[in-house]
Length: 266
Ligand SMILES: [Zn+2]
Image 1 (cartoon, rainbow, N blue to C red):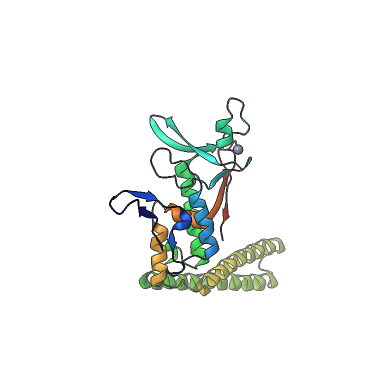
Image 2: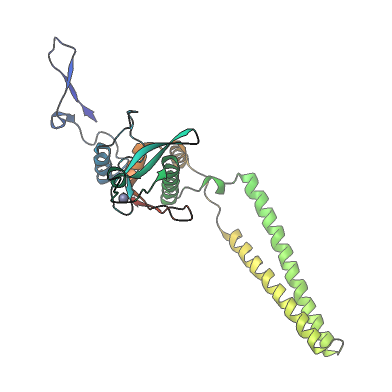
C-alpha cells in the first residue's frame, strides 16, 4: 500500500506537488502476496523503464520487453499504411535509427500478431504450471459418459476384428495342412492376416491407454478465476511484465516465418 505520493504545497492551496519517491509512506506487506517479492521487484523495475507511448498515453503491450534477436536492442513501434489500413509494427530500433546505413536488419513484425503469440504462450505456461486443464479438454459429465460408451464400443469392435484374424489364420493353417491351398497362397494370405492383426492390436493398445487416462478434474473456484484472468483480451500489460523478461524476435526467413522466443521471469 502506498500513500502520501502527493502533498499539499500549502494548507491554504489545493495545489499538489509530487513528493520524491523516498518520502512516500510505504507500508509493506499489508496485502497478501500474490507474486513473490523478487518477481514483483523485477516487474516494477520493468514498468518503470522508459517506454514510449506513441502519443496515446499508454505503452504498447510489449514495450520494454520486445528485443531484436540479433543485436539485442529494443524493438520500436512504427505505423505503416498497408492497403489503406494503418497498422502497428515493431522493428529493430538500431536498424530504424541508423538508416540509410543500418547497423542491423529490419526484424519487422506486426505488433498484434506478436502480442497474440506471446499471450498464447503465457496462457499455456500458466495452465501447465497450475495444472489448469485447457478448456477443450473439459467435458461435461454427459459428454464424458458418451465418450466412454463410444470408446468401449470401439474397443469391443477391435477385439472382434482381432479374433476374426486369429481364427482365419488357424483355418488357413488347417487348409494348408490338408493340402487345400498351395504354399505361395498360404504365405501371402497368412502374411496379410498377421499384418492386419498387428495394426488392429496397435489401435486397440492406443485406445486402451487413452481410456486409462484420468479425465481432468473439473475446475475449482480458484481455477475458474485463474481461467477468467487468462481469458482477458487484451491481456493486461501488468500480467505480461510479471511473467515475461524478454521476447526476442528473429529476422523474417525466406518462408515468411520468424523465430520468437520468450525468457520467463520465473
Ligand atoms: Zn537488431
